[in-house]
Image (cartoon, rainbow, N blue to C red; front, top):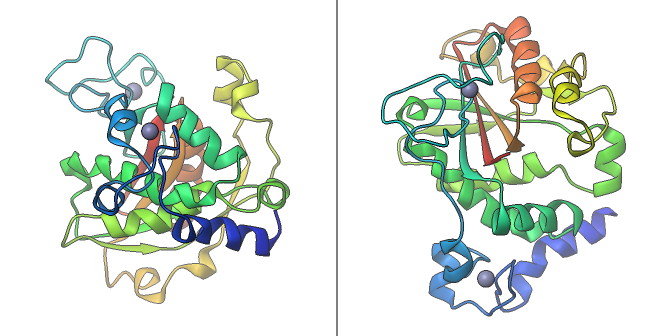
Amino acid sequence: MSGLAHLWQSVRGWVYPPACGVCDVPLTTARQVERPFLCGDCESTLKAIEDGYCEICGQRDDAPQLRAFQCANCKNRELAFDFAVSAWRSAGVARELMHRFKYGQQVHLSRLLGSLISGVWRDERLLLESWVVVPVPLHPKRLRERGFNQSREISVEMMRWAPPGIKLEMCELLSRTRHMVRQAQLDREDRFRNPNGAFESKLGRLPKRFVDREKKLNLLLVDDVITTGSTVSECASVLREALEPDRIAAISVLRG
Ligand SMILES: [Zn+2]
Ligand SMILES: [Zn+2]
């Protein structure tokens, strides 16, 4: 997608009367403010990840428990982030939305996804004074094909939905150096192996006050979907080594 096409896709949501991004039903202005580009019927089918998710990777347990627990996915694994939280289960309407956004070039849906990812703020571990928001990058080749990085677009939009008192500052501290096979095309075992060595840090982009450590450095990795946690863990490991941050959390709109 060219830069101009991207711009047009972005403004499309403002130019046309708003409609649901899934079923195309027209939306009232009030609804559009409350939840942009999603009707109430479609929203009611979304499944939030609330009680009873893994305290490390955010995976939901099928038999939700009220106490904190660690899932089978995290046992015997070294994950480089402190914890991950996802807002919604990747299924049905949620998956369809993400598909339209990424592959149907409906960039304006970033406003909806930015609002949906804000569900993660229910997790009190995220309620710190400030976070440096780091979108998971795309490889330049894929960026050229798609015309936008979905994680970056979601990061930009999520800033306006953060709870009051939390300062978010976006800083693209990573680049992707290896072109990867799409995760969806890999089996589970390959997904664990795939990301190794795929990212590099861009430390020159970090504002000086964080380099000088006048402020605590809390890094918030943002991805569209977390599946096994391998990609965000690889990102976290590169950042941890380069910056020794106080904390690294990962958040995503969907959990596969
Ligand atoms: Zn709808
Ligand atoms: Zn887990």
